[in-house]
Every structure is written in C-alpha cells, then in structure tokens.
Length: 186
Image (cartoon, rainbow, N blue to C red; front, side):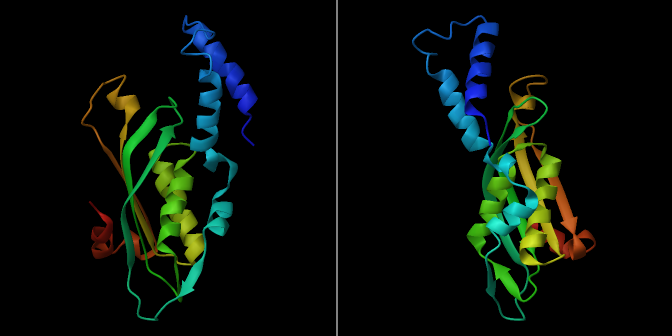
C-alpha cells in the first residue's frame, strides 16, 4: 500500500528544503494533494505483471481464422524512475496473434495504463506490457511500440522540446516478421 501520510511529511520537507513556507495559503494543502496524486498515478506499483494479467485477462472465444489484433495510439503517461520526471505525449501500439480466444480491446488499454502507473523506464514499460499481454492472451506472438516525450529531456538537462523516444518490444513471430512489425510501427 502507498503510505500517503509519509508522502505528505516528505513533501512538506521538500517544500521547506526549497525555501518555501509550507504553511502559506497556496501550499497548505499541497502535501495532501501530492499524496493523493501519487496514490493515483503510481497505482501500478501495487501489482505484479502477473496480477495485472489476471485483473484484465478477460478472454472471448474467436473464430479460428482471426488474424493479428492491433490496437494503436493508447494514450498513457508515466514517471521516469531516474528523475521522477513525467513521460508524456506517450502512446502505445500493441499487437498480438490470438490463439483460440481474444482479450477485450479495452483490457489492452487498461493493461497499458496500469503498467505505466509505476516508476518506470520506457524500455521496461514495453517489456512489461508485452509480458502481461502474453500471459493474459496465452499468445507468444506479441509486439509493443511505445513513443514518448520525456520531461527529463525537455524541461531540464538538454532542454530539447522536440525529442521523442521510440522503443520496440517484439516476442514470438514479431521478432523476425517484418510485416508484423510494420503493423504496429508509427
């Protein structure tokens, strides 16, 4: 469980360390607001990949000839574990080749969202999503592409506002089949 009380205390300490007065009008409720926000945006920390697959693994029968399923432009955001900086304008493309069943399309988006709600690096996010989709669907053939802007590059450091990062995770047939890879590329 996320310890909101401890977060409040630490945020108050950070405000003091920044030279702010945490008791002034605009900041009085900030530690509590940040604690509630962290509880929401880091919800995924509470679940393993296996638990996310179980939570969102609702499957439906499908026709044996069902081709590749592709869901594009799933909007999520995350926080980089190196700076706790926002990864934004993030979208995920997911594809898999079903076996005898398909997963609900909204469940794919929920899996991406929950996996992103962790302190994360983009490369691991793609891997986590692929692992969860593989377990939830029973398919070994999964591809995940994640595109994001990182505020640790746009708002600090190099301050390059146009930089975007693209990561690809391919499993099973997606590793070697260029046509399958093209299905989920931008």
